[in-house]
Image (cartoon, rainbow, N blue to C red; front, side, top):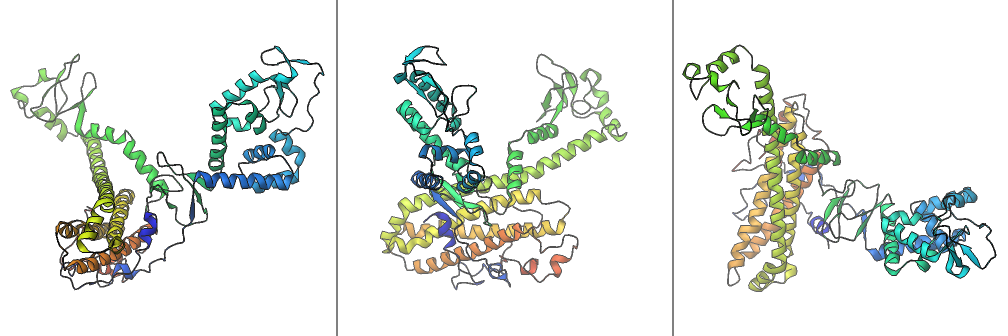
Length: 542
């Protein structure tokens, strides 16, 4: 069972005060539990199929056989037709029966070869040498070339890439296709393997509904139902990704927002902002200079070596005790009061605010990604080492301890969701104050609930791992962890759905909307409400 299925299996509804255990009695999901305040959408049927290379070959062979039977053509001709029409069987049939002659002409399936001399020896049109007819070969067009030249031509085309699947006769005036039979007869073993590989990959890469798993080294493909609502896919290699954009799974963020966020993280714009905020250009050579300590007397590096005042950027030769000494500049203060530096200061202030805002969201995005990777490592250790030890110490089968694996899978998934909520928050319009406050409240409650689950699965479980004999409290721990997993799952699922709807329950134009509403969009009825503690202030999503 893949991780996504294991996560879905956990979808039971949790109660608000769900256990008499003192350890979780203080964690109440509010007067209107978010896990129950919005209807949970039932788990969707898997909307994709994972294909191995053997599965792809089987499907490919079935399509070729179907075309051979319906159109009464050879296997090689069927391959040429399917390659040309991107393995769309229906389109091949439609085009063929609409205008067979035109299709043959476009694809290069010629039925009337050119007439050649009946002489025993023929001239090769590539090397211009004469050879016995037995050492010459021709495609369906009848243009003969020596086998050595054919082999070189075919080998070069195959090594150049998948274009060899549409290989044509070497004669510049001819459009005849070079079929598989000729390649099989003239190409070397290595080239035939490459050609077969290109043919296999073309079945996936030319399809609109099949894509390769993007994980490095993975050879599985995904056949996706393009009418599905969710693009989330989990391959047999355990890599989860978005089928639409091939990036990692990123609910609740849309593919376009993910693309913008990734570009921003990799772009030079933030470096430029940092330079603008933390440095000033040398007045002489214009190289940026950072001042991280010391007085206002700056000396540019060689070969410039220009000495200037950090505040007003004037030559240091014009400064001294009369201008304020080493730690002040009267000229700068006077000019600033006169408004000479207003635009420059405003520009630096805007850049600083922009940089601080981006840094705030990026650091938390990266921290949750780091926590997700650490949780994956802990999950692997739990599956390969700790679970067996716990089974022996508690006298339970590993199947009975599956709730621990479910909890860790939920932690990994929630870390991923929480990570992308920071990209969501960064692009949330700043003028929508009510929506932003509501979002940050949701995000803070999500963090608190996830930390609660993470602590239970990590630290509280460690007590039982360290014990030498079975402990009586393990049954209570199992109930606690199972219910925490369930409630956290329901909360995060509802959080994702709310964000995917754009927090439409919140009317940003009415600052009182969040306090008036009695729906789950009201902070008073919000999910994850704690009796004894709050997750975060409304203006700080961390």
